[in-house]
Each structure stands twice: as structure tokens, then as C-alpha cells.
Length: 236
Image 1: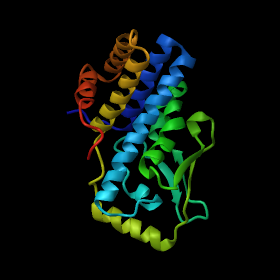
Image 2: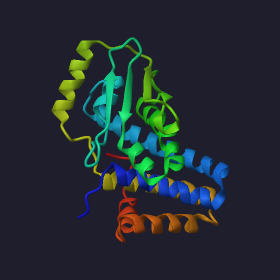
Image 3: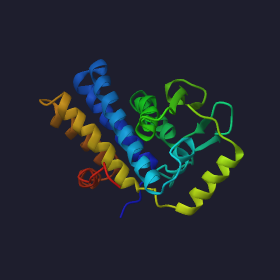
Image 4: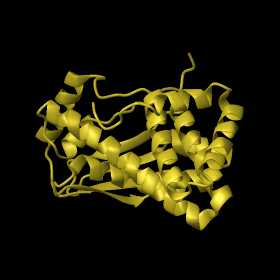
């Protein structure tokens, strides 16, 4: 069985975005990509929230930090900092496997939309009606020196951080999902939106993207995507 990582997830996204824009144009394609990316992020955030609530853990920025669904495997690791006990809680990223993948592939113009929309959508899905929000301040793929995200609606102490660290140790890998799952979910949301927005061109767009991905990663990649896209992504 192939071992997947963030590079495959990143290039899945950028190859589909490229296929959309090649077919319908950049401006029209951007609207489809924004909707699909936001739907993907909101859905992931809602799953995080379901696990957080099922464990009866605090549903705030501490919970958001604990219940993330992915962990880097292979490639250069993500590097950044979290300062959730700052006056305005924030986190940074200055090395990222998604950025690296798009840079090396020459796909930054397509991958940048992921960073532009997904993090705020994750926060929206996780916090729901609560007053907290994740706000994207700077993104490397969109020209920023670093990625910078702040959180509104609360302040936290060292004791809060200790509580979150203890919960993270307690749950271990329970909240994590494999890359096949994440890629299946991402492809599901992209394909769904493409079919809704461009019913006449959808199969041509998706066929072009899948052919390019099979050429890049091997003939079984598109089959893996379709198989994993058939899962239920709304429940845990």
C-alpha cells in the first residue's frame, strides 16, 4: 500500500484547481474553488467539534488546538509556534509541506487558494455559534513572510495550556485521520462543487485532473481518491 503525506494532499488540490481554471477561466474558477475549500474546512472543523464535545472537553481555542485531525508524515515537517496565552492568542507557520509541494511543482498560483480559505473555515466549523473566531492575518503562499493566525473571543493562561496538553496526551492519536481519508474528503468537496457549478464541463474537468494525478503519482491514485470519497465525512 502506498504511503501518502501532505505532498499528495497539496498536489491533489492544486491539480484539480488547475483543471477547473484551464476549463472555465481563472475568475469563474475562483468562485468554485472558494466554495469547495470553505465547505471542506467547515466540515473538518465540525468533526473536530464533535470529538471535542464527545469527550466533554472545553470547546474553545484550547479544544481547537487539541482536536486537529492530521499529523505530518514524510517530507519536510511543518514548523511554527503557538502562543495561545498571548493577549491575542495566535499561531504561526514558517515552514509548511503544502507550500513546499506547490513551490516545487510550480503550482503556487493554484495552491494558494487552499491557504486563503481553509483555516478560517476550520475555525468557523469548530467554533460554530461561539464567540471565538480564527482570523487569517498573513499567508506565505499569498505573499506573506509567514503564516499568521489569530483567535478572537477569549484569553488563556498557563494553566489552560497545561490542561490542553494533558488532554492531548490523554487522547493520543484518537482524533487523527489518515491521508487517504483527508484526500477522499478534499476530492469529494471539490468534485461536488464542480458538478454543481459546471454540470456540462464537470466530467471533463475531473477527468483531466485525475489523469494528471495518475501521471504524477501512479495509475492507482485516482482509484484511491474515488474509493475514499465515498465515505461519510459528516460523522465521527
